[in-house]
Image (cartoon, rainbow, N blue to C red; front, side):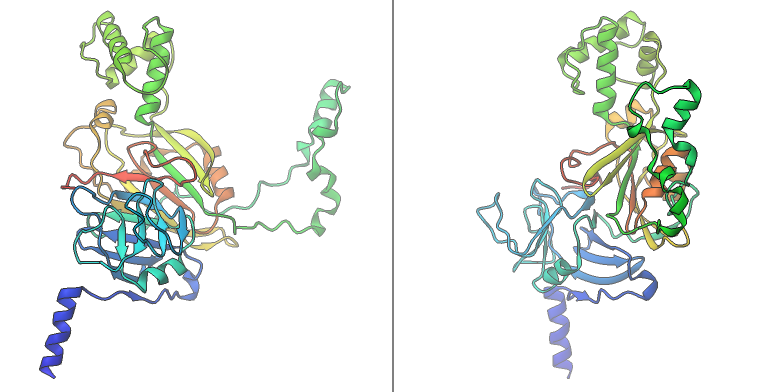
Length: 420
């Protein structure tokens, strides 16, 4: 008996803890989306439904020189049998793509308990297939240095499901114009309100709200470096300083134009784009500075809309968070929100432009970040009317990331400051 027990323990040490999977859910959480969380320090993957771990597995991530990126990702495509188009056609069964540049979850016959891949997340046979069968496109995958887990968060800013806008027969625009002008000089047909025509029989028609569309993806962030730079190039050119083409890139022409403007305005001549430089430039152009923040909305990997928002205490980090709707109850207009908070060190440009102190800690609670956001009521109203099960809100200090683009959700890449 002791010999068998010793052998079993030895196997666990050499091979690692086995993969486990149940994917079961209680009735209240049955519609909750799965969230996949990868811990690089533990070489472990956990699958959450709500706040409950429903499956886990060992893994092997990218080895030194091929580090697996950390951050918030989504499953972009799935393929039962795939071969790498980068590494000599290497087999990648049960592939779930996270970026269009080659990062994916997939099965491998070599899954040591240490980083060994070229950047992908290798999973053991059996578990990779079972996970593949449970996921859908758009499912979030969070990759972090250390383990993280979703926790409930409550804040008045978090949207709740709402029905469609209330019916208003006065929205019949042709009638409004006719009463105002006494005559119509154009065909009124395009101005006729279908809602007004249906008013007499509205009670006989089912207008129940359907909350079964694709999940909404929301990103709350600061204006990006490229957006800030493009605006500065536009203003410099308008004021007669040749900053070159408006491309959002700080090339030699833009750098020289910034220096010339600084010299003319008595600023420190160093070519740096700082809060003082920005304030002076906008004042010289006779314009108000734009809001610090921006909110972006996507659905089904496609942009829906974006809008400016305010951030209080903009010289303090917001942190990096993924907040996901769970226990979605459209009938009662209520959903619970769960937050994952990730480590993320800010790049130097973000700190310099927004005057964020180098000692300001990036580890901010999700509720504290939400309390500093000022989202216009009409924007929040629009989001609430589009909200559906599995919707999520990502918060980041670093703008639209390089992996966010064609046929993606919002990808937030984090920096841990640890060796790659």
